[in-house]
Length: 402
Image (cartoon, rainbow, N blue to C red; front, side, top):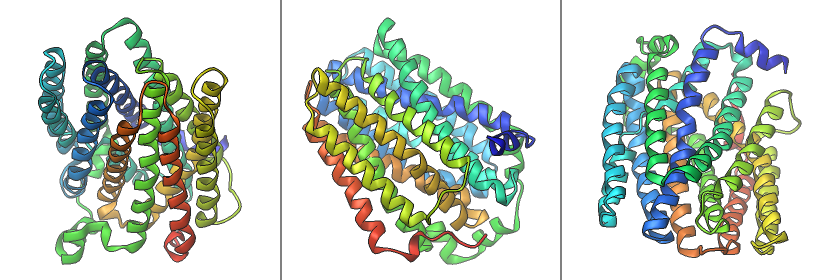
């Protein structure tokens, strides 16, 4: 753990970490509370669609938000979007309280997604300016582990709130936490320094291809984004699987917590040492294992001992996901130029939301109370597709010489 102690000793790292931790924990809280709230009032299919609208709107606008943060002051972009985000949150809560037509929820979810502050991409983009190059893999591994930790604590907090409060009340508390976390990120001194002009930013503004397509001009970035989309598609399937296994109750948080807990443990272990094999070989092994884990869970029924088997599949999938997320961040950070790094990570977040939204939509059509096999099978298929994509593309998954 020496690498992590040295990382936390770097000025500004601990403060920024605590701020983004509060911001990120609200993501999994919102996913669960929103799914439960809409499921109880409208049904599984409608709940999947509402979450899909939120995810896709977040994905579509995310790169534009990242580009704004790259080229302007990130603090101002974060605070401006946060104000709009809170207004959309209020509208969504009002629609749920009034049991409004589901189209109203679609609109509110879309606005909520458009106004998400890009706290995650900004923080990931600032790591190279805070730590030395030889510490970046550990920094990204630490970031990934913390991100997964929020998906342990988030469902636990949300599940606890859902046991004592109606879903709308749990969502209101989630919104207050989101406001506090993003505001703390925006006001951190390290974020303020990122807003200062750099030569790389000026280069991105002046050159046509970079200005139009940003980091997407690099085929290696496009390959990574395709793999990330398939990966988070599987996570979307698992989110709905958790709710279906729990028959629409707040205890779904147990399954999603197992998933995230595995990611935290494996992510920390991965960043603490050097592992054999290159990124391509590691990704093939990890995604193959993930596909097999989901297939094993699909073979078991969701009742009795089968329910334990489904929980074990969630845990094993999480243990394999920690190193995967770390590899994704390291490769994106290596391959994206400094003046486009926030936008590159914004594309990652957008693709993640898009894949997740499509996954929840498809799984929502397949799921039902106590029915888990179809959604797990679809998630396993997505993991197998990543293995095939990695196997046929060698050069695209090699780290740059930095």
